[in-house]
Image 1 (cartoon, rainbow, N blue to C red):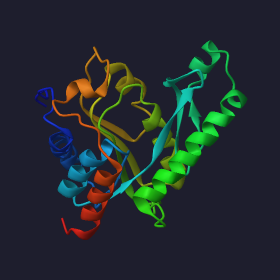
Image 2: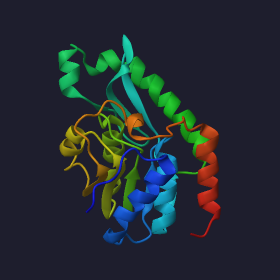
Image 3: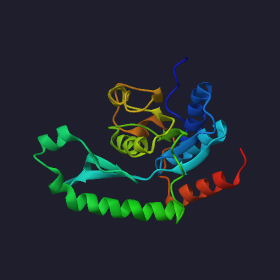
Image 4: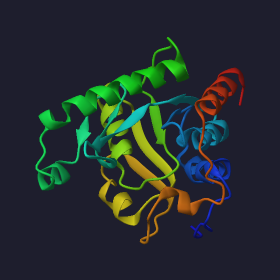
Length: 219
């Protein structure tokens, strides 16, 4: 396959290119679970091109309490926290030290689920081909939590698809899904946003709009 030219113009363009890469896999009406917020515009294009169903799988980073921007794990709806054991050991932390942080992030996760999906439950996963989509993989923490939440629901096939990911993360996560599709995996990687010309923040209202549009449109 020819190399992908970086940066992507925006998430929608990246999603169309990702769908092109996924099409040869011949997925049958896949369930595309996008990680909000940034993964939703990407997932919308993937679902549209593949004739799939779009929904969100809400995740939250679990931060180191004294320095919340430092992620020590993540949690996804319907799943348990997935923690970085090696990092916790280096920081001399255990799960009890994170109890308050996990509770706060779980509450925020539930608020976002209500904001995006209302009272509608997560679609049935058992026996379906499921594609978890995000706009990129940096450390991979939220993607790991998402896969860990989906796998016990017994999908027929579970894929992780991203336009770009850090080479080390893509390599480390290769066995955590039945297939991992990344259009580009640069070795020098500081943040997902560096690989997009337009990386404006996606608002909650944008997520809801795309979900509504996907739910009422015949691809």
